[in-house]
Length: 228
Ligand code: MN
Image (cartoon, rainbow, N blue to C red; front, side):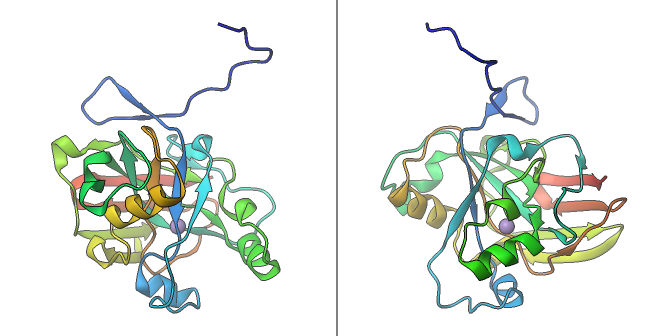
């Protein structure tokens, strides 16, 4: 095998509940505006759009329990989401077969530099600096589908400093998990290690240093993250 000319980049992994094994991450896909009430709060008509996706980087996933407030923004928002981890992939996956590719689920945040994202939207430019920055996806361990099944409903709640900010139900997702897998696989080749952040309910808003964010969803427990 050829020797690397520079230090080898680390493969990002996620812990798995009840296991010594870890889940290696290949790509991080994120869907936008997947809850109707959130689409409306962002100024869009939820009935008129195909799904759309952006990506974060695997090493933006952050398991430290802390979210360092990023530079170059003064309006960083919480978006509480469910991460879907794939154990297999392919192209043109059929809806009816899509769920057979799911390994498990985790709680996570799609932290967003909303001011920067807004500027990029206005200019018709890519969103990356608003979305794919260091530590921008705090997340918890993966719960295997083999252990918890495939949740399709249940209240997802986000509290900041003990006050409810976001509340929705998984059954309100416009594009369900098999829809997302089938749609993504028509544009990309999905593969083991890919994860999908499945969108956020309404109620997104700013956080500040010192805040404590806590997201909960029944079969996944809760995840607490400090803004530092
Ligand atoms: Mn999001």
